[in-house]
Image (tube, rainbow, N blue to C red; front, side, top):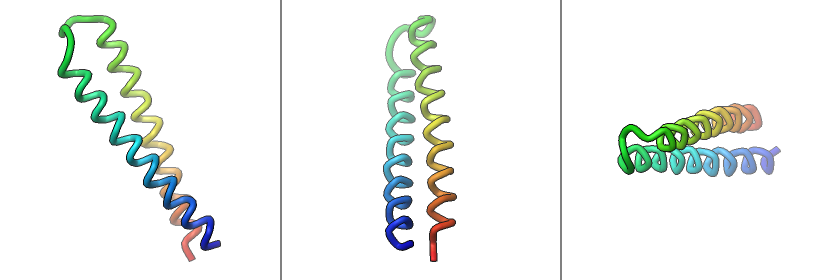
Length: 70
């Protein structure tokens, strides 16, 4: 069981860092480009959906990590 706990902990760290990376990419994307561009809005929306999905995945990994603690 110790191996599963370590595995899920690593997944929590990786998915959390990926979420943080997407968050910063979205912030940088919002600060660049024309303000009324449809392409910018689509890109921002796509990054937002990726961030939400990664946050959900991170929460699932946190729950699995917590459940495998001994």
